[in-house]
Length: 406
Image (cartoon, rainbow, N blue to C red):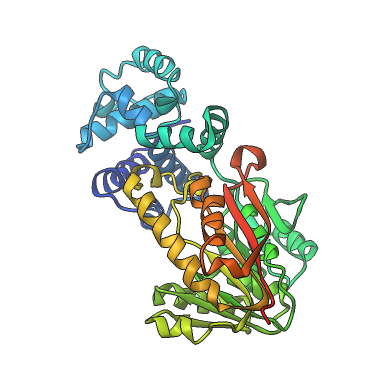
């Protein structure tokens, strides 16, 4: 591979914003990719994947480069040189790469790779927490899997098309996909491609959604004609899936505390032809209280640490703090207590997170079931998804049923 100056400058500028200013990697990359209209897909791929790669392995690379935050541009070029050297890329004769100690870099890599927190490039506290919650063996396998690049998975929008038809249309666009056993509406891209430029996307034939995430709406056991409430809907990936499972019949009420996310859901719903979704921003507790005992099904896709989706959000490793996890656990329990009241007698509820930590998952459900609000519910089943077992995101989902009270 030959390094091109303008592409490398884009990578360095992006890393400066992410590593020093705490900007979100995905947003920074979106901006970087608009930088030069002449860039082809290979150029854009180089910029995006190199930035993500260096962010993912930040601890390992900075340790090898012997630099500490905040990183000046010279430091960031040193980190870049480590990345390139470890990939066997020949460094050009640029001033930034003068005196790069290639042999020393490889030696340091071999030495540091014997210690998990360096090898997997994670903060000390996260390594300790992973061992405490999952055990040494499972955590080692899981964090390795979470450091791999995520596949691009599509969810076929069955309101508008079929899996076979979509697969054929994408193939005509030069995008080759395959089905995944056990995921009825999923297609996996065989090679990365910008699917958002396709007519199929513009026509609402699919959404990009990880395979694990696609299991959540199915877990809720919805039927056409039901009233379903998605309580933490965000931009609505699961609400859209619920609408398609319900064949556009009945009602999906999408709630969120952030109105701008629900506005994004409205745009997506229009493109998907999902006409049975109604958005309601949670501006006060009245919005929730009006729905008490009214829903056949309730989805609580709770805010969480997001440790199950590190493959697609590698910068979360550096933003996440131990106190955030403690605080979010209190929020999860409050949400369970409050939103469970929306379920009618005989109705069902799913509590889900994109976390792999039992303390955010099964332990929260157990705690809820022993509380006053939870005593009216029975535990039906749950599913813990680990990335090293499936190759997809880490997730948790539990199905609870409300007793019919006389």
